[in-house]
Image (cartoon, rainbow, N blue to C red; front, side, top):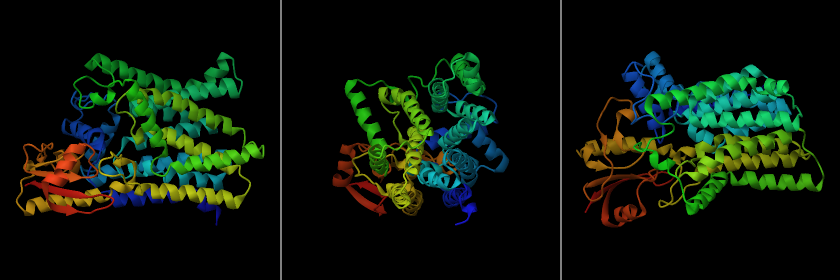
Length: 469
């Protein structure tokens, strides 16, 4: 196998193919709000205001919505343009991820890291969407590449990107700042003010930009993060002790979900081997472990103390840091056959993670794998069926992510759309297992008391039209 194979470009081609395949898919899950609705507002109002109206404002810097609206302005408002708008960030993920890994263990083993990175179910699930989290991951890896390769300009640009993309980007940037500071103090023994300042000065422009935005936002609208009347305010509600324990369990589940369980099984085997044979996998191990621990400490409090901030995509920097740490330890394993076998097991686990489908009554993060892909074709078929039977769209109830005007999902200008489901008032209900907002009681009523008049698919995605008997 030639040296040229060990490069990021095969993975860029992989993402190119994925975007090509998904380019006509409607906006899905949180991207309806964070991408489509935000971009619509700037596009329709010709960028006449900086801040979004309260009913749309998610508290983040509005740069992602502006970026997407600019793409529409330059290339046309369409689903393909929207999907291709994320491709530069997917390319950056491959390039910066490879640079980072090559610096740590050389080009051949860097290719192995890109296998773990680019086949991560959560990252692939987001790559099929018009997701701002792809920009966050790109800037995260840009910053890490700059830190480990001592390229201050990359650090500066990466931190600016993190601080202008979202509040989670700001939190991630703060975690990286603490990592660099701790690394300088405790691992590199740089204690003088001048040495520490040289280590962290590249964080200042981005940090000041993020702080300036938060202050400006508070002055302009009177709140930071969320407000009590916002549609997502419930997600920011505090939890009691029972809720805290539940969040601990949920986040633990997130770290095992969709094949990630095998990361920990392989890690346990590797650590046992290294411990028994008294092998030290390299000086960089302490830095990578420190990176993961600091990001964990910075990220977890908000997730554990609030009701709805534990989605898989929120954990992407942690997932990537954990994969990076395991990949580095795996590289120290002397038996090449077993090392390749462990890598193959992890690749298999990640690929099969897309087929972890839970029963109807268990909520699943459908934007965290590629399992949602059949949903788009089924949705189109259901809409065509309703038209063919002359069933008005407005008479068919449904829930997130399909309730609301078509224009925000299909970019077709149609203000009509499915209303929120009310089983006591409506005669038709559109159900799919990608919808988590139907309660257990509503699901029981639909499948036991209503007539199933049309069904598309069975696994991994099913779509059903129910009619009141």
